[in-house]
Amino acid sequence: MNRMMAIVEREMRKFFRSPTLMLASMIFPLVQLIVLGNAFGGKIKDARVGVVDQDGGTQAVKIREAFDSVRANMRTFEPVYYDDEKTAREDVRNGKIQGAVIIPPQYSRRQIALVVDNSDNFMSSTLEQELTDITNALNQPTIEPRLLQQTVLQIVELYPYIEYMKYLLPGSITLAMFVSVMIGGGMLYIDDKARGIHEGYLVTPITKAEMVFGLNLAGAIKAVLTGLVITIIGSLLAGVSTIFNPATMLGLLIMIGLTSIAFNTMMFLLMVRVDDPLVPRAIFGILNTLLFFPSGSIYPVQAFPAWLRFIAKIDPFTYAVAGFKALLLKESGFLAIVPDMMYLAMFGTVALAIATPLFKRTL
Image (cartoon, rainbow, N blue to C red; front, side, top):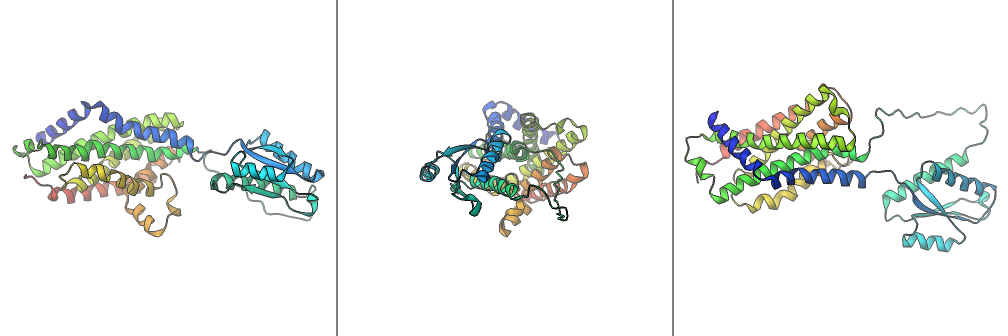
């Protein structure tokens, strides 16, 4: 144990003597959380929609009143009134407005038209949905017939509205820990081998198992420190108050510990036979894409094709994100994260068991 802890102490001294390395592993996920959390997934507001009223009748006035109501309340779009349909279409094409509603002459006999710039699917689908709701409201009779009974769907939401920044928080915590393991674990060990520093290990009586466990423990401690910092700072930035719940804090500590072990043993297994220091740098982007994006941290796994679902099924990122999401966003109990904890623990154990015999204690 003393020999193993000596390796841990050496690795931690190297880590704390490089503040740039520490900041790099923490700042990038925080920047991603702040930028992506505010750049994606928000509700469309203040979009400019042109309105060409070629009718001027009573029904057309109702449509204009509905648009003004949207501007005053939900602020999804701001109506811009045009006299000429051709000008409105050109402004949509040139990007001056995001869409145009055409109210044709004799509107009571015809339908209104929505001209959208569908090069931006998110914007166009939002405007289409908003205009569909307005159209449905206009089609409702002013006085409901007494004999007409309709089935009403009532939406019951378990949680308050979750901003995209909160939704992205579990993935950002997981990514921060992976970056820490990649930089502070995999790359440093390969650099030591390239410089011949690891030869100092080989002249000591330390065993292969002690060396493997020591290196993995040191890497896991670095990832735990990173995970704790990002969880606290990220939760405060995103406005997640569940971290102050003692049960949630305990669950987060366990999840951070198991995630760090799973990630570190995975990277150790991938790098155990690598000697070229350029290899981990070259595959960093591939691993990030292959592990982070299929995890469900950005988009639901249920929307993936079958082959990508298979990757998500064996990806430790998937279980780490699910566990953090259950604790931070859903306020679930401890039992909800047991399957995720079991998989991460099993993944780390299997990866370590495979990596240990592959580790070379010779030059």
